[in-house]
Length: 245
Ligand SMILES: C[S@@+](CC[C@H](N)C(=O)[O-])C[C@H]1O[C@@H](n2cnc3c(N)ncnc32)[C@H](O)[C@@H]1O
Image (cartoon, rainbow, N blue to C red; front, side, top):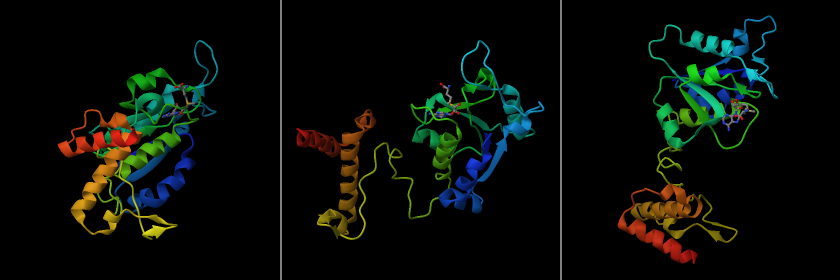
């Protein structure tokens, strides 16, 4: 996969692209990153990328020319048009299902905003997706872009080792993940649930499913809506309700 990031702060991405699983994915050639400072595409002598908003008001607005030129430079001669993703608190709330969708693409371009926002023509005529990472406002699109890139790259085949599984992660199954324990079996008198030490694979899987449902029921009941549950699982939900009374 190829990932291009348009930003006026490219140095913010240097450690992110080099460290941990993302860095290893790059070293293994699973993903190729490039940061593009769209200031380089500004045509005026001060290389400005922002200007005052028409109609007045506080804050500066990112101009269309440098961002259009940068994207056109990146897509020149390419047969398949890449997804052009605008990081924006007005965008669609980001979900795991979107990460799975983006992980199927060959080329993604991220646009990181700053200041008051973007000239509306960027939103209307250049981008394919607008993504928000939550109902709060950050100073720039770099951290949101990193969050999205991280969630997409870890889904690429061969990126996660056997020790980490994306399949059972929270939100991949539609539920929150079950609790985890590791050694020691007793820590400060707090014991690991016996079933996990039993070596009985079937019982362990059942316990995990039940605890995953319990956790989702307790913390994110909205995720259970429309989820298909078998009879035993429906029974468990009733039991959680009774236990809660
Ligand atoms: C200060 S914000 C601009 C907010 C804008 N005035 C508004 O009300 O929608 C500057 C930039 O940070 C990024 N940003 C801030 N919060 C974000 C969020 N929740 N999700 C994605 N991007 C965000 C976007 O790139 C945005 O253009």
